[in-house]
Structures are given as C-alpha cells and as structure tokens.
Length: 146
Image (cartoon, rainbow, N blue to C red; front, side, top):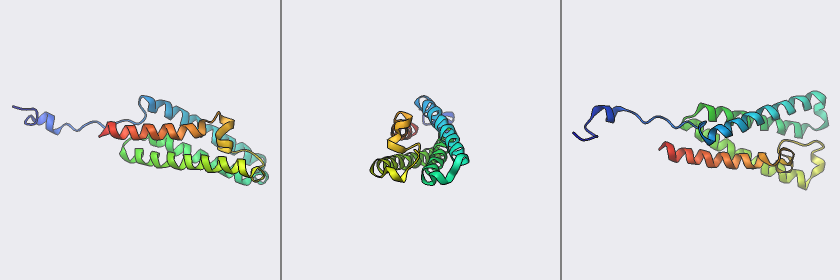
C-alpha cells in the first residue's frame, strides 16, 4: 500500500501557517506597541487641543488604526488575514513615505509631529522599517503555507 492509498494520509489537511509565530511574534509585539503608542499619543494630543494641528493628529489616529488592524491580522492568522495585513503594510509604507516627504517639503503644514513625520525619525525610523519587514514576513508566510 502506498502513502496515497492510506486514508489517514489522504484525509489529514495541512495545518494552517500561523502568522504570529517565529519572527511574526516580534512583528506582533512591535505592531502592538505601536498601536498603543500611536493611539495614546493621538488621545493626548486631541485632548490638549485638536485645533492646534488637526492634520497631524488625524494622521496619528490613522496610523493607530492601521497598526491595530495589522496586529489583529497577524494574531488572527489565515490566508485572508495575511492578505489583508499585506495590503495594510503596503498602505502603511506609502503613508510613511508620503507623510515623511510632506513634512520635509512643507513643515508649516505640520505644526506638531505625527508618528510618520520625517519618516518616523521620532520613533527611530521604526515606522518606515516595520512595514517593509512585515511585507517580507507576510510574503514568506505565503510560500511556507502553500
């Protein structure tokens, strides 16, 4: 009897690849920390005076939502979550690059910094490194899962 003839081999599905394991666990930690950091910063900034820099504070709130969604997707796992997290990482990278360039080109538009200002310089450039690392992990996770 060959391996393909045995019913227990043919009916056992391959377990799904968990996104939050191995290096993914580090990504979950970083995205979780950045979710809390960006959300906390946004709440404090908006409470102290939203009218002072509404664009900057709104962009920090968007960053918090994006970080939170990516964290959730990494923890949830599965192919749909992987694809959603990949799209969000790409959007996050685009946001960091656009806001980073905008803050350098027109500093007057940002009287207060955002999480993504100056390409995340205030956060040791982690906001620009994190989505790149996330996309690499998520692309690798697809090849491992298949």
